[in-house]
Image (cartoon, rainbow over all chains, first blue to last red; front, side):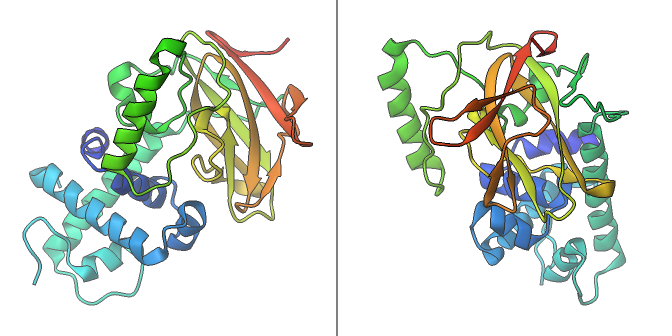
Length: 63
Length: 214
């Protein structure tokens, strides 16, 4: 599944991928991500949400 | 009401570890699988047995990824590019187009001081900094246009921060950035050089078989 996720990440937009990786791979909080990217916590949360939805869509039955 | 293939808001909050309302067992199972799969993916990124080499940045050999496996990381990780002057206007135009098309981010300068390198060679380099009081440490350098947040380090026990980053063969300058504001050279770097602005950059030379120590 880890490999499938890596491949699925390829299909996200750059913004979604960046947000998802910082959140779930690097394990940052939204506040820390905001410090890094300066996009605002709400916007970053939305990117992560959309990234998860997109991954769920791509991975389909594998989840 | 949630659409198929989309997580409910409660499931999203569950994944964020925040207080949440009821999440159906089915959706919770999907969320757990996504989280566990991501953890498995993250673990594969870690270097096995990364014992601390007190000497500094350590090169991890034999982990050079195939191009395909680099996947998107190739896009977001530092790459040194050798550009012939004749291509500069075309590349500049392309970058402007890409920035215009693709992103709301401020365009970063593309004139970073990258040396000539054998572009296809990438070596994993281990960066480490002891900073027990830091909230956030990242490494910024000529390999990532000096963007302070682009490459965050992960905190380990004892306040040691580390990251293993693929770098192209060649010469790179960098500094650590603590809490987004404080720039410091790597105290354990092999060489420090004047950055031309009254500060000090750390220098690393990456050869085809590892970090070069002269």
